[in-house]
Image (cartoon, rainbow, N blue to C red; front, side, top):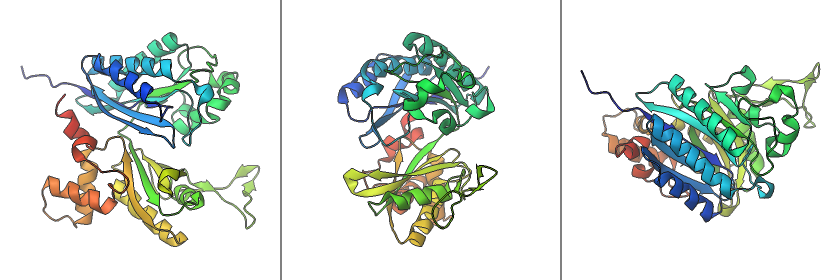
Amino acid sequence: MGETKAKIIECVPNFSEGRDQKTFDAIKEALASTSDVKLLSLEPDADYNRVVVTIAGNETGILNGAVNACRAAANCIDMRNHKGEHPRLGAIDVVPFVPVSNVTTEECVKISEQFAEIISKELNVPVYLYEAAARKPERKSLPTIRQGEYEGLEAKLQDPNWAPDFGEAFFNPKLGGIVTGSRFFLVAYNVNINSTDVKYAKEIGEVLRESGYSKRDENGAIIKVEGKPIKVPGRLKEVKGMGVSLEKYNLTQVSMNLTNYTITPIHVAFEEVKKEAARLGVTVTGSEIVGLVPLASLLEAGKFYTNNKEINENKLVEVAIENLGLSSLNPFKPEEKIIEYLLSSI
């Protein structure tokens, strides 16, 4: 019989704390003492007041790692004191499980359900299942579950339609709520706009994101028909986007989640933002990837910018980094950002 290949699952917990080193250290320590799981990256953002943690491992390791990391974060974070640019439902905002190799989405859904059962009981928090794990169509979308955010969660839990999938319909003021499930590999991608006025980034995000925007009249009022806003669909499929301020760099960003980079590749999103920025009279000054990125997406970008010339892998990655301006805010180090390069040591 042939050797069974190891299953590798990625998990990307997003915690609502972007400034406190003690919280980051507690998460790292919890993961370091867990077997069969590896911490791939921990990227805090003070403006978003959020930290994106990426771990990978086998089925047992990823489940235990996720539980242990969330337990550590829950000890440190108190949502009653939290403010930040990024939408969030709670201290442990979202915990997606992502198939990487030799594992199916269905298997990752089961792991997310095991995680939800354990964490809801241990922390006494309501947990919602989203994306591939969603048990109701209206819960597939993360922004829909997040509507009202932490501040509106107490009222939301009183609505029977928003009873959690795991845990009690009880508002935990310290921790809020958690969303978990399984999804395709998400690329968190931000494009820099050389303006401190966030209106440009917001408009670009609305025009490009798949969900689009509400049509307005010449006075800026939303146009409605039979009480419902007229929606203008966005240009890019599998893209979520919004405009945010990045005060420490004196610029703004079109902050995007590319939920399927094979449908809307990174370089396509970047070039479309450039087109819209030019239309509005502002310029793009590079971009950044938050968390990790699949090698294939950078190779595709490299091929695009070299017109598919026969060039080796390392050169294609270099070309992608240069043309996307991925080192404009912080150095982009392929060995630390490309998931396949990090996973080779698991």
